[in-house]
Length: 195
Image 1 (cartoon, one colour):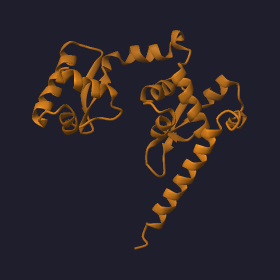
Image 2 (cartoon, helix red, strand yellow):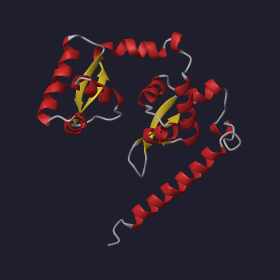
Image 3 (cartoon, rainbow, N blue to C red):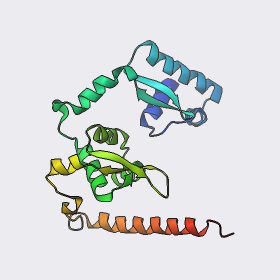
Image 4 (cartoon, rainbow, N blue to C red):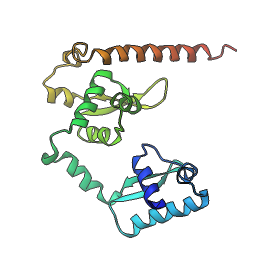
């Protein structure tokens, strides 16, 4: 396998920008050589007018869609032909509905997969919204919208069915996570100004 293919594959799987040093170490090459290879990959996508670009973001590298196709992507995501949600989108929406407000990292933890693309789709479709930041981690949190309630024919979130009979393990896990979060918050507050 070529170094180029390995770098592209790692960047495709990454959920956050990845630094040159980390990528270089992963493929066993000097950082300078990795930097040149990454610049070459970025130039390839730019020169060939591909739909994706390799960008430097937040001190690392990440794949992104070409801004020139933004309107096409938005229209595709909200078009009638794409009106049915995928299984991944439905699962992610359920996690958000029951755990809201919830961060992207926590959603990914519950689902066990990267949810970046699915969260973007749900935002574009107006089924979820950015709710604020998590008080412990500072991560953006998400919650459902009135459109979500409308689509499900619900008056309020209180009408969602109880999870306990459906997923007893998930409810126990949620209680345990809530306890851990409360302990972390308590520890953080105890450490504020008490030296």
